Length: 498
Image (cartoon, rainbow, N blue to C red; front, side, top):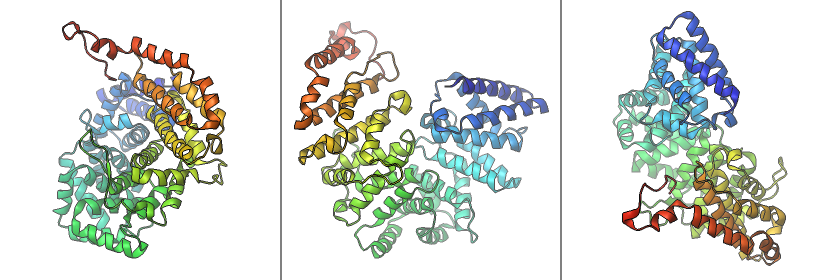
């Protein structure tokens, strides 16, 4: 956290405390000024994403935000700045979003009260949009705590979606309904029991041809969760449009590629995974391909579509949640034998991106080379590294060479950096540090099958290095020490990262 942001959070927390204790004009003015500064500082990913819910000062401020949202003395200006500040945090920082939406704060109810206030006091379309987009981001989380407010929110959203004059905030309304339906069977039941449900289903079918990709993909999700009759109708209409079986899939890919609105790509990836992959509840079982996805690689659009999606690795900031979702989708495809080869071959055949003069595989390499601090979210470089391993493995198994797609020295440097990762058992990153070494060794194993690279590889991953890794694991790994003791002599507990 930067010094400026830390100072701003401290000042805003103090101002919020004073205003909560005494809502005089001076305290209100001070709070507005500090919130305005916070909105400015947290508007970028690099600032917001680095904040931690373990920061006591920040948690205090968030609790005050929750209380002030519905405070009688809170002005429309203050409330508006609270909306913007909370949106910046919730959009850029997943852990804070979960904290806000979950059991700790349950802030969605307070935000909904702001929605009612915005309508009652006619605060204008921008204020309404600010509230709705905050609700959209918060309700995306699976841990969102629903309550009595949910029924009233659903009623409002259905009325907005079905009204004759389409509101400019329609994408937010349909996306929130999509989030609620995807996360709660009771929300689906509430929608189905609505007096406007019949009108809503008719409107939903029309919205599948809407200009907004968020509206289209959210409508598809709602169709999938609401009822079988509606799903069958949509599948029939799609087959006419695309002349390929089970053609809701290209619509999802199109929404993912274009991603024209808030969290469109998030929703598209989630729906694609549901349509194509059966996630097994049994931990020991591997995911399987669905009946919808079994013929996916045979469709004429598959290779070009995969290449367009892979182009997002070049276009999107690799540190964003959007990028994380795209990596997740590719890794899900690569985890399945039926999809792996065709997916990887499509990525390997990608041409140079016109605007950035780079290829998806080079962008993937660059992401895998990020330090945990640079990446902000430590899973991102690890996911990129795993995808890179799939790509190089397919390349080498088909008589290709590393240097065909990446400079050999780049890959060797990546292997060296990963295998020489220092393990700090007291660090919050210790789990990821161990995984980084493991993935580095897996990459080395993959590259060792390339005759042209093997000789240079032995200079990077030497026998002494492998011996050192094993030795350091045995000495520093508390799990080894713990299980090596007789049961009666064991004291304490295993670390959280185990």
